[in-house]
Length: 453
Image (cartoon, rainbow, N blue to C red; front, side, top):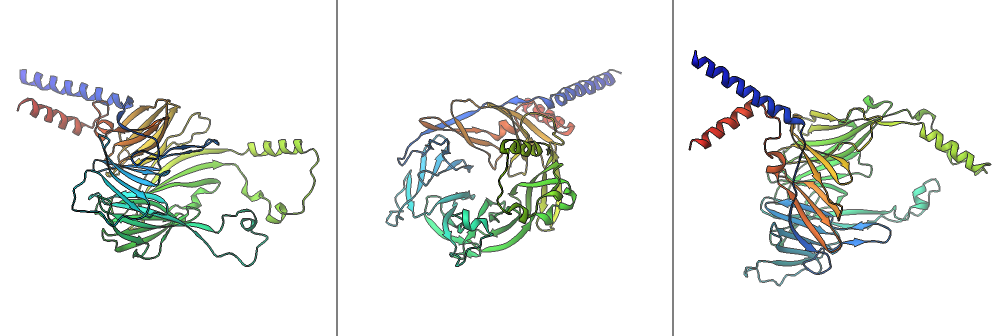
């Protein structure tokens, strides 16, 4: 009888604890920031360039990556890449300039300074051996047209219409030595047009995702570590997303993210509902007809604005589509932000993925606070964390790292400050998350083992 009471008491106790853990799911825990180090703003070798123009435009570091325990930062202003340890020591400076081929590579240095004749540094990817894959962009002008098409507005009003950016990928080793130049067919082949994303996958292959002008179609190239083309896939949004289902709606592909697994791509799409009647759009000849004088122009403008305001555009949902390239099928989808009409405040937007394909959603609460939700590929919530951003500087380059941590920069008048939220605190931060029964029992067993060593 006593044994039965003990068993019953144990079951009740475990149930109560499990209930308490489950009830904490909705709690949003503030995650404390970790400022790692600061680097001065300037043009010197170990400084970071930042420009604040009079028209309000801000130009600062264009990319921040955390990989293999190092930070890699692209200084857009000074056209250089810095490799930085977490204590803040700059151990590699790869900058734009004439190449240096007279270095004594046998001498061990704690800091490497290397120059290469970049055109313009773009995206950067880092592999497991700390090799740098760097996009080198250049502007190419298309041949001038012999005749001007009067019906083509681009010919008459857009002076830059014949200029396009093309890119090669340059591979450097961990100390900045140049290895090879990569084009869309492999080493030293034709350049890429508009590189959208670059990723190193779980197998050490190098993935390059290019896009067209309208972001409606893409090409995914996969190369091995030696720069040999393994395969390429052409992707068209309409083939993947059934646009027939969006009648009377407006669908936008917000982003396309290569995952670290071999065949998975994530499409982030948004679906809006609108009452705009597209069948009543004026014909081109009516729009470009004879110039006429409008009487009572102010009244005409008010009528036009009133007619535009009557059209609604309500967000129905955001959706992630997990698309398998091998089978050319949608593996699964994850939907959120259903029917936001009449709601105030910011929406919850897709933020990034980590190497385990866990998704990160971002929502602004106000000007200094945001909430990040982390969820598994099956849609179950891992954690929700709030971030408080002080308003004594400009926050930029906030992004998800491969290990599930989050990095960011804060720029004030004198310094660039490096911040990081570690993955163990972000995803596994204490007991504030809802646990499954299996996870709860596993944690109890582990605690019992540690207590009886």
